[in-house]
Structures are given as structure tokens and as C-alpha cells.
Image (cartoon, rainbow, N blue to C red; front, side, top):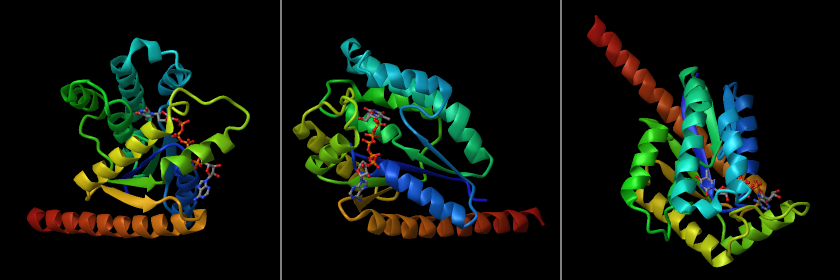
Length: 227
Ligand code: T5A
């Protein structure tokens, strides 16, 4: 069993949901226990807040309150679903996580960066993803994909924002990857679904192999000192 936490990030319609489902199938076929989840949401408490946030009901309260609501939803999600699943040795795949708050709530905002750090500490404690896959697509493509998919309902709080802002968010995700190359890997989401899935499958197999070797090394080291 390999305890491992993978988050998927990127703009609207970048293919996160599609690729999480494919990666979960790939890992289950290898015999891994996998939990898939998403934000905002993923637990009963967080799902209640998802509706408040995405309906736009909280928008008039301002970006700081929205950031707090995302953090509150995340705290519940982490405590009731993510941490227990990891402690049980499972692989958790999460559609958006704290990097989305960094990009959506803090980009272009005059919020104090200290607020962001404090909210992250409150929601995450010492938990960080082992790997973050950033699916990169130009905003024009992602917005169009999201528009086609939702044909039967109106755009949510964030989908309705203009394309230039979505493109700035894309650049902000790329900057996160540049700043944290160990954790964040950018995958070209404009490729066809199958090619993206193969690239992600190979990347994750590699990382899991390295994590298992490291865990083995640690347990052998502990065995030696215990003798
Ligand atoms: N938010 C979230 C914040 O502001 N702060 C936060 O802290 C958090 C956690 C969540 C919103 O909340 C914001 C960000 C978001 O605006 P959501 O409804 O959960 O909203 O939606 P998103 O996470 O934005 O995800 P989407 O559902 O819009 O897109 P996905 O999951 O990236 O894309 P997916 O897989 O659904 O694909 C979209 C369409 O494209 C097709 C699919 O078939 C589908 O029709 N597609 C492809 N087409 C061509 N080539 C490919 N490679 C394709 N892959 C998928």
C-alpha cells in the first residue's frame, strides 16, 4: 500500500476531472487503493459550502470571505476524508486543492499574503500534496470546453469571468510550477485525452516507484538502528 497524495490543478475545462478518472482506473488496475475527490467539496460539510460559493451567494461578501469559505471547506475535507484515507495507506487524487486558492483568490487581489499563509496553515496543518499535476491549456480552449460541457446550465461564479482573467490564472499556475518544480509538474492538456492519460500514468508510476524505494530505505535504516 502506498500512501500518496496527488492534486490536479489548472484552469476551467483543462481536463482535470477526465484525467483523474483515467488515472484512478490505471492505478486500480495495478491493485492500488484509490480515493478520488474534488474541491470545493469532497465531504458533507464542504459540499454545503460548495453550493454557497459557486452559486455566487458569497461573492458580495468580498474575496477575503470567499477565501475563508474555501479554507473552511478544505479544513473539513482534509479532516474527514483526505487525512483518514492517507492514514489508511490509500492514494488520494484530488481535483483542485490549495493552489487553486492561491491562484483564484489571491491573484490580482490586494489581500495580505500573510492571510493566505494563515488560511493554509489552518486548513492543511502539515499536509501538502506529494505531487501536483498542472494541466495546461490556453484559456480560450479551456473556457470553450467548459462552455460546451455545461450546455444545459448557466456558468458558475468563476466560469462567467472574462477570458483575459482566465489566461492570467493560467500564467499564475505555470509560475507556481516554476517556483516548486519538485512538487508541481506541468502537462500539456491540449493533447488528445489518451496521450495526456499516458503521460500522467507514466509520471505517477515513476513517482510511486521512487516513494516506495524511499520508504523501503527508511524501514531498512530503522531495522539497522533497532538491532
Ligand atoms: N475555485 C476552486 C477557487 O476559486 N478557489 C479554490 O480554492 C477552489 C478549490 C470549481 C471552481 O471553483 C474555483 C475554481 C473553479 O472555477 P468546478 O465546477 O469544480 O469549479 O470546475 P473546475 O474545477 O473548474 O473543472 P471543470 O469541470 O470546469 O473542468 P475540468 O475538470 O478541468 O475538465 P473536464 O475533465 O471536466 O473536461 C471539460 C470538457 O473537456 C473535454 C471533456 O470531455 C469535457 O467535455 N476534454 C477534452 N477535450 C479535448 N481534449 C482533451 N484532452 C480533453 N480532456 C477533457
